[in-house]
Image 1 (cartoon, rainbow, N blue to C red):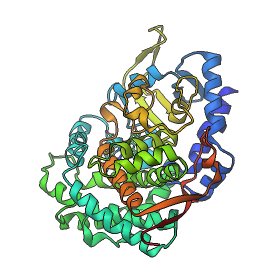
Image 2: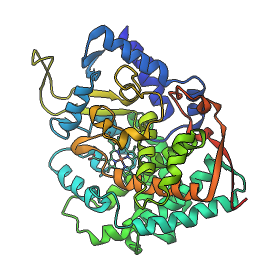
Image 3: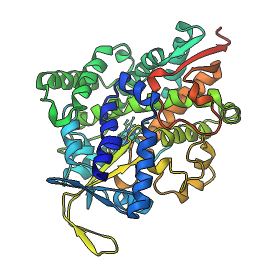
Amino acid sequence: MDTARVAAEVVAPTLAAGVIKRRPWVMAVADRFQWDRPAISLLRALHAKYGKGPLRLRIPGRDIALVLDPGDVERVLEGSPSPFTPASIEKRAALDHFQPHGVLITGGPRRADRRRYNERVLESDSPRHSLAGRVTAVVAEETEWLLTHNPGRLDWVAFNEMWWRVVRRLVFGDAARDDVSTTALLDSLRKRANWAYLSPKARNRRSAFQHRLTELLDRAEAGSLAASIADTPAPEGVAAAGQVPHWLFAFDAAGMSTLRTLALLATRQRQAAKAMDDLDDEHHRYLRACVLDTVRLWPTTPVLLRESTEPTAWNGDSEVWRAGTTFFVFTPYFHRDPETVPFADSFEPEAWLDGRIEDYPALVPFSAGPAGCPGENLVLLVTSTVLAELLRRAEYRLLAPRSLNRRETLPATLDNFGLRFTWFGWFA
Ligand code: HEM
């Protein structure tokens, strides 16, 4: 009975919303009925009923364990890629539609080289990527373009167009600014990826996309990630170009989180005042913390899957579970559990700056451990720069949704496609 409830209240809504490419109409329904709230409550109830888990679900032919304890989240993430590989069977089935060589679905000895390559080009350890100057210049131009062409109003469609211009210019260079057809090609493959093994591979389309990608990367335009790729030798088997589809796909999540952050800042005076003070900080420390907390509140990867590569011991070593067990970490539950996180349902960027976050190993908007997101610093650089440039130019009021105006409890689900603003500023 409880397995059926997890399937109906946690798994089905997550799949329906589109794991690889969100479906706007489902997101609108999810927001209307706040789908994440019952999912979070159910996992809290299961924790109370069965203890700290992980809780094995009764699914014929599969070993799936629901992680319920923050310490176990830490264990499986720190233990990646071995004995807990991120290249789980479901992820391989989904991502193979458009990124067969991506590090996330690479198992075995090849993974280490691919991971290192991602880290080098994305400069994972550096809060300021060497392209930071270029990020500021591109973002300044594109935000100005956005506001000039949308006087007094801002919605998802307009924002998203601007966002992808920024992404294409940073990844491929200025020549790709208006190459919407490549983004559309990727989108169509991502829609198929939502269906994982249930959808046949669109092999011709995938080859067309890969071909286009190679053309764009071969230009290696100065000041783009394509140029960094050209300058970074790749050991055999890395498939450098094959890493890029994941980057493009994942930049989508960054755009969603940026507009959600703007919505939070438009409705919260205290944080908005601090954000304005942050505009002159080259590192945009406060705005970065704002984005981190937005992704905590509405995780763009709500399910982290890990699969054991060898037998693992649980429950004080009293049980050994076989290799191939899937560990299912539903992050909204950990991020929004008021029993363990005092600021669960409020916007609390300060927690990322004052060290409080260290006490919560299960607050993992960008995952964590050796297979955590290598793009985190680059994402925070681009998103904080976009927010800074938008805030510098105008003042924003949120028109929709109204749910964000409630001071205390933030909504469990927030449809990014439905965000609408009006703005005033020196452009108006
Ligand atoms: C808001 C934006 C983003 C968020 C919240 C995010 C979050 C995550 C999470 C949670 C994972 C782990 C996934 C899993 O274990 O299944 C991950 C992996 C990864 N992310 Fe991101 N990501 C974002 C954007 C990006 C961007 C823009 C890039 C590249 C430019 C990127 C590159 C990667 C790569 C390569 C992996 C796979 C790492 C591995 O398997 O070792 N991400 N990201």
